[in-house]
Structure formats: structure tokens, C-alpha cells
Image (cartoon, rainbow, N blue to C red; front, top):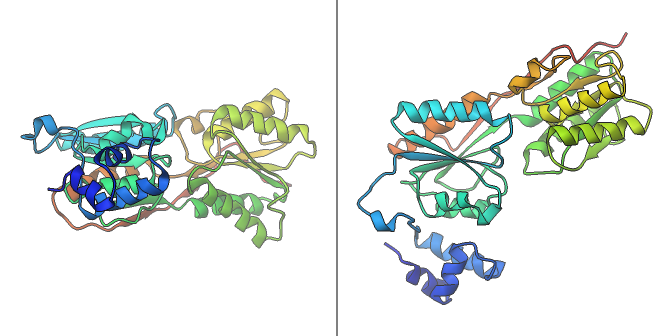
Length: 330
């Protein structure tokens, strides 16, 4: 088994420099860190945070690493993972990647403190995931692809979902459709914006005039950005939001200004979180299978731990859900 001394020798650096790089220390330049990580990958080097207990061959724990545990989107996903892990007699450890490469979550990957990991956190670098994944330590990533033989990706057809939603609004007679999103984070929301823009272009509509992209993908930012749209005047007949949380914030802003939804403006979200059907008016949105994705991710982890062959990429379809926040123009 390769040691950190072997990694340092191959990379042509000191052992302390190699240690700093493998622990994501800012003391090492990006160029040197990349060289050390490549050496570690070549030697199949794996840090072991459980070195004091080497007799343990399994922790019987699976880690789920997400960007923010507080978001309502994650509840169904976590339940899907949890149901499968518990049925296998394993524990689930859910943690946030807040802090990025310096977060505690990174240790579950780089130090093999769990038996496998499911990652839905775009602030964890692909190279960290590639370095961590091994035949005996499978990693499943959600909403992106990582180029590694030991990493499986599960995506949702975000572009098609947004395309269908915009197309539905166009079919209902809407010609001025705004899109409100947050600051780009990974590929997910970029694909949703692409689907919206593609649908409008195909119908000869302007997909650029009313784009608002800044801040977080949460309710407060949806509220603030909607207030900006209202303040600009010439209200669109429909607004699409990057996710349901932003849409719910947008509905609150419209209500505050006594703008009727859907009487004066139709509203569409994305994700179909549980709250979407209970907000008033009930939110039209794009459903993505959150529970099913979590359950599949966990099943794949166990299949890989058992040495089974699996596909390296899976994609779930989406479905437009029509509720009370959308109406046809007469």
C-alpha cells in the first residue's frame, strides 16, 4: 500500500508539502497541489482517518453530502437514501459541504471514514471526488458528471423540464415570459435557463430581455428579484423561477403589491417540493423525482460495494405539474 512518503517522492516534493496538499491547505499552490493529487491518484494512495482502528473493515455507514441541509428540497432525497441504507443495516450520516474544500465533509471522502458517499455539493471539486473514489469506496454524484471509473452520476433532465414548462406557458397564450434565477452554481440552473431560452427562441420570442440572475436560490431572493421586476414596470404575463423556493418568494412579493396570481401574472417553479401544493395559489411546477433519486443512489452504493457492475450514468425525466398559479390568456 502506497504511503504519503511514496506520494511525495513521485511528485518531487517534501513529505510536509504532500501532507499540506492532501489536507487541502492553502499553503500549497494550485499547480503543486494538482501535481501531488495526480501522484496520489497514480499510486492509488488513500488517506485513512481510521488508522488507529485498522481492524475495522467496514464502518457500516454511508455519507450523504449536500450543500445545505436546511433546504426543503433535500427532505425527500434524504428519505430515499435513508430508507435504503436502513434496510441494509447501515447508518446514514448527512452533512453539509459549507466551507468547501476545508469542510468536515471532505474528510468523509479523503479519509474513508465511511463506506461510500453520495455527493450533491458543487463546491466539492471533481478532483477531490476522483482522488477519493475507489473500488472499495464507491461515490455517487448527483446533478453532475465526474470522469472516473469509480464514480456514478445521477442527473435529472433539467433542460427538458424547463423547456416543457416554458412551452406550456406559450401554449396558454403567454408571450412575455420572464425568468428569475440565482447566481450560477454548477450546471443545474444553467440547464434550466437553457431550456427556457430554447423554448422561447423556437417560438420567435425574446429570451434575453427579462433575465434576472443574482443571489441565492432561496425564498428571500425570489422575493427581492420579483420586487425588482415589479419596480421596472411593464409586468410580464408569466414568470418562471429557477426553483420552487424562489417562486414562493415571488408569489409573496406579488401579493404584497396586490398583483393577482394568476389573474395578472402566472407563476411556475421547479422541483415540486412538498410546500408547492400547499402555498396559495397552489404552485405550478416541474416535478423531479427526489425520493427515487436518493433511493437509486443508495442502491447503487450497495451494488458497487458488493462488486456488481452498474452503469456510470443515469438520468431521470421531469414532468410539468399544472396547479392554480397558471392560467390561459383569453
